[in-house]
Length: 226
Image (cartoon, rainbow, N blue to C red):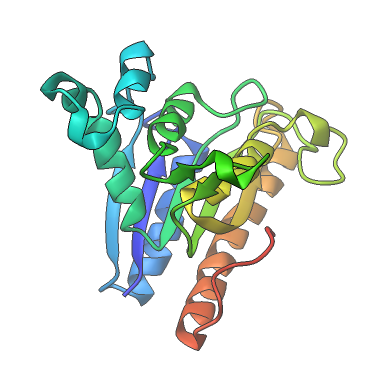
């Protein structure tokens, strides 16, 4: 059984391109694998708290020494980490806002990338003291952009700070591979956007088929991003 964590990051609850792609992915998967487990996390409906000084103090206090107040501060972070820890695949639907990730998604990342839970820290390792504690997961990123050319080799590749950010921290999420499907030209609203949306929908359906084939063939889950 494959366990999914679906994280929706768009501030839009309706007419969201990324959520619609997420719905397509989930529907396609469930129609073929109805017994697989899904956990849903909507960051617009329940945005994670941004970390603060008290959060940092609590996270860096040894668990046995935390006060009841510190445990309460970390309670949401604990829930989010447990959801991620229990998942085999993280389905992330996230538009690109101002060349980066939505603030609610950044808050989610900051809550789950946490010392003692998703990474360890040891100065004996020299210049690379951080080491991930999670592994073996995949991420599917369904994203959208108002302009175009953000994919590798595109005219705006250097302006994409969403995918590179996730790539930079994916090992702390336990993710070995990120599959990316992207809709572009949204602000133009012309035939190019319509074509991009169709291509993304088709790519989402094809990705479901590919992942199910890999799952049923017992293919390794790690690898370089697509």
